[in-house]
Length: 265
Image 1: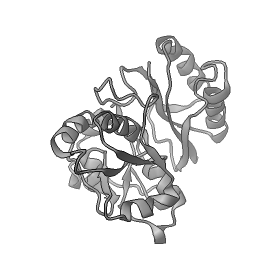
Image 2 (image 1 turned 60 degrees about the vertical axis):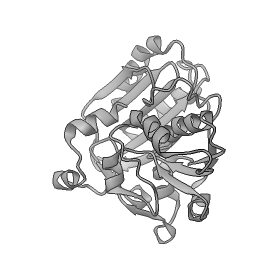
Image 3 (image 1 turned 180 degrees about the horizontal axis):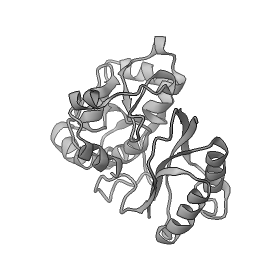
Image 4 (image 1 turned 120 degrees about the vertical axis):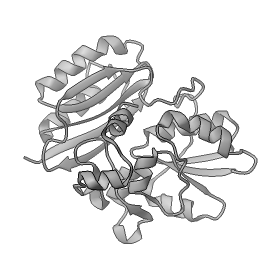
């Protein structure tokens, strides 16, 4: 059975996030959905899979239903497919952050970098004065990245702020274009850099997944595969499932415990 996969997030004030956990878990379970959803005071972040009508029911409830009361009306949402169910079970977890950076000053609801649509991304990263920055973990970068992008060499996103403090300088790096898988890490990273005085910070709206979905392969500046945090492992242009095997992962230095830790960032 072909499954529909929904990846979604939004930074939004959810002071009642603890009380939302069980209603959301029960709603997803009732639709036979599987996957992982993180809830925190700062918002929601998740990827779930199931029948198309079940995915439609969930996304409608998140954006328009009574459960969240209209607070998720700007949900960043992407759809793809999987040849088989890419998750073993359903998890709805409570976290301090929906993506872990560890910087309380980085609040995307107050300030965030300039969004760049996939159609405009090539022109931005080809400009000679642009520093192109991959904000993902080292094993993800090893599987694929954009031409000329800087790899921060981090094992978890929480190390990004240390990399920025040691390697980036607002007086030298005046124009930064960053990207990640779906956009959420760049929301936090751009807020962090802006708070540190960087002048121009751009990020790819919808992330690599949106770029691979919308930009024709003949025009693409992406090289390699895009790692995803489920059993599909990697996607290519058109969000085609590539089906990498365990030896491919080992060549990229990815151990199973690294993958599990990164999924729950």
